[in-house]
Length: 323
Image 1 (cartoon, rainbow, N blue to C red):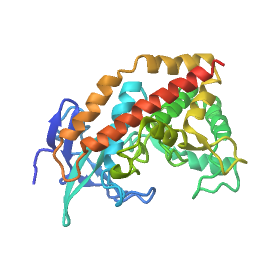
Image 2 (spheres, rainbow, N blue to C red; image 1 turned 90 degrees about the vertical axis):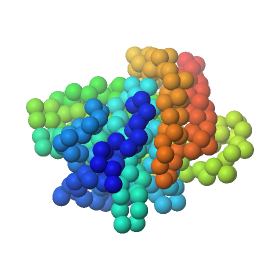
Image 3 (cartoon, rainbow, N blue to C red; image 1 turned 180 degrees about the horizontal axis):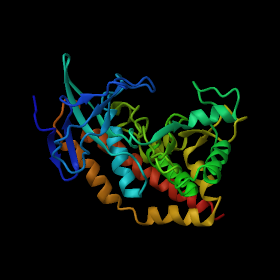
Image 4 (tube, rainbow, N blue to C red; image 1 turned 135 degrees about the vertical axis):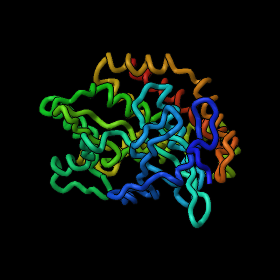
């Protein structure tokens, strides 16, 4: 058994062994979501500067039919750093069990459980919409979302710049193709100073084409990939009445930036400053990690092509907003 929690490290990427980490007595297994996850507490003597001592982390496994899905959380975090979006830190991790080595993503908890309180957005949608369906989230919509966040700014001392947060959400989820930003995957943190802030963009595993089997897409040309990406939709609907039609990712960006010219400039500057080559190089280092369920060069190439095409589509949508 590995005694040091860092098994492999290259630059900022690390593989962490959490076998000896303590489980949380109140939240050992989380019921929300499709993937197995458990809360663990880091030890006092963590040796890497980016790991917090005595801090909760989620250890999330992949869905059985997509064994390398756990890498998606790690890649999404890398992308967030390059476009300046608030996302919890995520690392590849392993844990020994009776069945052998379990691979998963290790995700830093995003608020202080001892002094702060987190409320999922779904709790507020159920107050706003009396018959809100919290299982399907089909009434999870942009209009009520914006109204609710504006209400926080007026009544709950919201510290977060709400329009920039919305722009970050639209940009990030479109960049990674996240289809699962439902009402339980964002919310409000109540601080101990009576102020509030919007949560980081957590739970990013349903993205980056993880559901596509590589042998099925290896021969796709750029046009086929583009067609696939354009069909992707966010979890949000435009309004509570329009329950069947999710907003296409790139239309969501156009809708958000059209609200305010300064927000469009904010998003454009992020794209102008993006070091695409550096970002892809950092993602590629994940292929060097030796682990039971590796991040293959084939998976990297699929994700690389997705990212490049998504960036093109995002830029096109911003240019279309000028017309």
